[in-house]
Image (cartoon, rainbow, N blue to C red):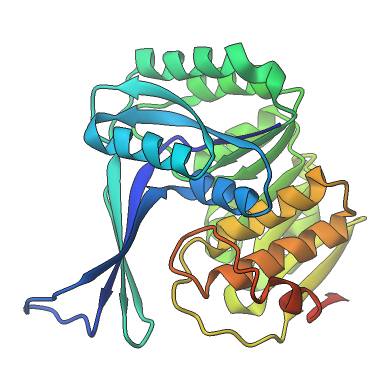
Length: 306
């Protein structure tokens, strides 16, 4: 089974406005209001492929109840530790020109006791899971001790990471990572490497931290990845109508994890990730796969060594 750890859960609200204007009243229509956070989006993608998946994190207040109930409605198993603060709300505003404005709350601060409570919850169920995904922002209050304890719990599992900054470095230094996915900005900022130098440094980062493989998503330009110590560019020329790009990277992770758990080759799994990602930007719901175009995209994917 698959466990998706999302430490900073949210309610994702997608709001549609004709044209966003400063210093004026902006009337919006709520297109969707769903459980959110990167790990939830990954889980939603996996559910699109009928994979059984559990989401773990913190729930608090009315928002926490909404998140838990929403996960259950989507047939995603919740493994949530209750805290005495509200989960955050993330507003994604889309105008008629498909411009996107993201307004995210920071989220609750987590106490040491609450962190330990979640660790105990995961530890009691860890034998059920073979694949562990950790993605999204890290809430205030969680420190390196929390991550050391988490690493000791999941160390014998196949680990997929989509986190950034000092916590990512800590994770890579002390655990074996099967797959690391970041976007250009996250990779550049975390490893202090200019974007123009990413290709030249991918293999060194992979070797230094003993990562099985790294993938850097490039937005509409596709992604870079390493396979057998060679760097490749994967992309598609299939044209889609973009309505909401938020969550596309999570769909990439979800599609890739599905491929791996299905026993596909690494390359075919990467192709599934890219196809899921591109299909998702045509929908308002983060992580969801648009199967009306998924397989057409899959037929129009290209890979070249760089």
